[in-house]
Image (tube, rainbow, N blue to C red; front, side):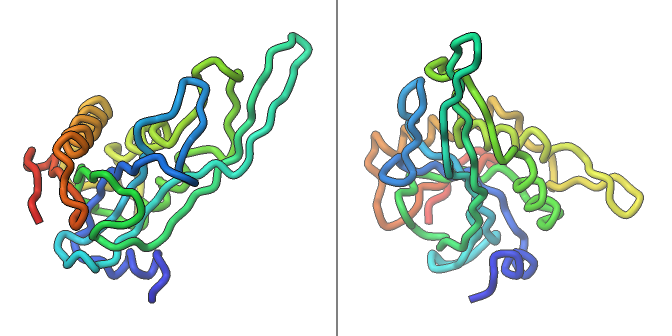
Length: 204
């Protein structure tokens, strides 16, 4: 099986999805504001393919967290993050709840580089303040830069084909569609998918 990067280079008409997973086991994030409803990640997949088709998933995971007490008696929690990139099938895998197609990728290598560099290896927040960073924050940070042009070969080049929707619309679409999937108890054999580019659910 090819490495994720080699696989990315050979992918035809790559598409970018936001994927939402159920928070179970290793995917659960313990935050001061309570458990998230979902674990957020990205999936890059070809335009078409069978459910066995391999895709690339990008996500971040907490690798370590520890507390620090400053002279003012304010407790800080510092968190270290690991960037995880692996191959997953286009069909159902792990605890995936739903996915939302948000963009057509123009520059796959630059998109991957942006995903990996958009989040620091360490973050710090005041403990029990409700400000702990999450995978959802990471997805937002990544998307904030994807719609802007980058300088390549002496000229501005866009990473995406067409305009990328703003974060508020993407977040609303992802959470509302995932809620619909949960309420309707969608089939466990396929991954419920919504296409933001066409504003419609995709039935496989």
